[in-house]
Length: 114
Length: 110
Image (cartoon, rainbow over all chains, first blue to last red):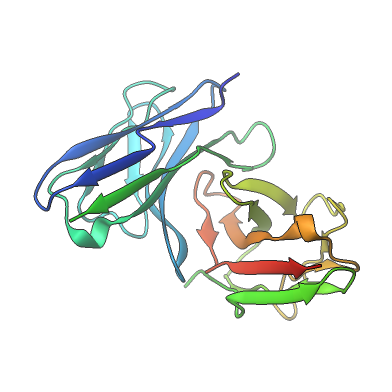
């Protein structure tokens, strides 16, 4: 069981470039979420999904897109990178049927936008 | 509005001293409260949830609905407790969505 995996671990982008952060889980969890972690601000929810084909916005969705075509994968797309998107990004998954919303986190992707 | 507040950015104590990491929340309804911990170079992991009323690694946390608080306590801190601690809130009906506090860095000195 790999749990929640994220790729890449590190990424440097130039302003205006686009990229996709990958997230996968092998626990058959219905819920998946993306957070960004910034110093002094904790983790903030970007987008989340309660199942394949269903996504919704979180607290800070602007500049990001998501899709959920399978239960396992939940990629996060940066459309046109900006320096304000420099952050550490965490993907998480959970299931209402076990652990009552305990979220399992991936190792994170550290993104720098120059 | 739903909000979680952790007033201390950094808490520094000596080994063997008691520790209390504060967490206050605002939420209309019945929230679920959690404490997550992030050790150096590791991913976030669940430490405690209020519905379990358990003690993990010597830590306990009691939900005080009157004071809307969920403080994390440990009577005798250990050096291996040094980490970033996040208090988080979830609605019973909003699975997959956690609202996090700003985090408190706990440093336990020898």
